[in-house]
Image 1 (cartoon, rainbow, N blue to C red):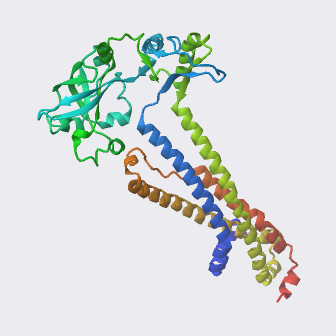
Image 2 (image 1 turned 90 degrees about the vertical axis):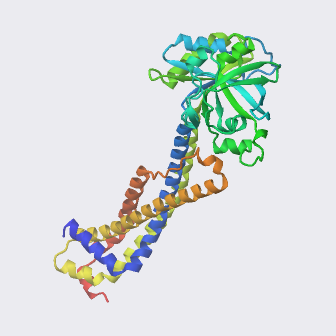
Image 3 (image 1 turned 60 degrees about the horizontal axis):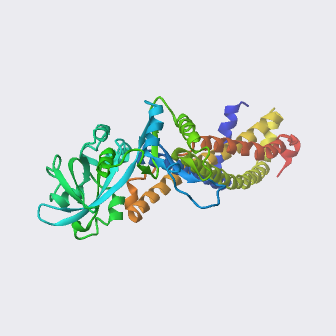
Amino acid sequence: MNFLESIKMAFSSLAINKLRSFLTMLGIIIGISAVITITTIGNSISKTLSSTFDQLGDVKLTIYPEIRDDYEGKYPDTDDDTLTLEKVQGLVAQHPGELTYSCNDLYDAADIVNENGETFSAVLLGVSGDYFDPPQLKKQIVQGRAPNNADNEGKRHTCIVSDVFCEQYFGSTDNALGKTIKFELKRNANISLTIVGIMEYTELEKSEMKINTTKNKLDIMTYVFFPYNTMLEAKGLSPKETILHSAQIGWTSSCDSETAKKYINDYFEPIYRNNEVWRMNIYDEQEEMGMITTVLNVITIAISIIAAISLIVGGVGVMNIMLVSILERTREIGVRKALGALNGDIRSQFVVEAVIICLTGGTIGVLIGVLNGVLLSKVAALLLNNMAAEYAEYITLSVQPSIPAIIISLAFSMLTGLIFGYYPAKRAGNMNPIDALRYE
């Protein structure tokens, strides 16, 4: 009897006792579906975090001074300790075409009187030219553009405002582009800026600023972004005098994150070498994301192993039913042996039958596991939209079944059939044909 005939007989046997076959598979189905559900959830969370991270911004390194771990005294604050714009520009100047930087700083709050004589407030922020490079910020620009590097280097009096600001000042966003507004600052100074772009607040920003719940829009304080160098000129500061809390270092296609880290360390190491209090720290968002993914993978694997233990229970069930099936088919085995079937033919028939049972159960378990992952993602999306709508635009939920987990699960289910089906098959193959024919 060849292998194909063994498969046909196995399926025929399963079809004869459908309910018993299903109950036999149940342990395998539960075990495999649990493993696939868990790995699908873990993989989906990892992919969701990764896609959300990519959507929120471009990849950059954040640098800032921090206290050394072994320092226990008072915290002095001198020019040598601080991060200045001059130091950041010096770093980028050493690697032209490879490194870029971005930073932002508060200039001042301003009271603005609109065309109807109504007063409202705004906060002016100085930003470097590539501040609006991240995809999420670019997506918020609905008209015009953001202040760019040319504006920054030329110290131009351009700005980008929000749609709410336009409604406060002009009554609508129509014809706001190109208009020049005079801002009366809290520090008893004035600055005039020309609107070159209009941005729209995200749902999260609207929630934090209570834009949707505030009855009077004049009570909302919005942000106005203008070139960083223009702000320095207005403050009368030089790059050497400009202290930064932090700065973002990016890199071009001719560089990578590890090379950028090396450049940063090589540049700041001599500066902070003899500083007993402070050192320059590099925060890598990608590295943080990698750590989160690693933790998720470890948790997923650990829980999957626990869930896979149920496959042993399922395997024992398969062995038990195979032993019962052999007893029921003893005369059939005797007849086949009397007609010339070899011990190996009998063994292969029952081993194949056990493997088919486990593989069929494993396939059903995989389908149920993937379906569970899809349903859970739908529930998560529904809860997100109902309970935290302001975060929904930042999070891209994606269902990603783990292909390696599916392959391993199916292989493991076949292995379960081989292991737990071999003993009953061997017992059937070793039967004495005369005793088998006499069996009642």
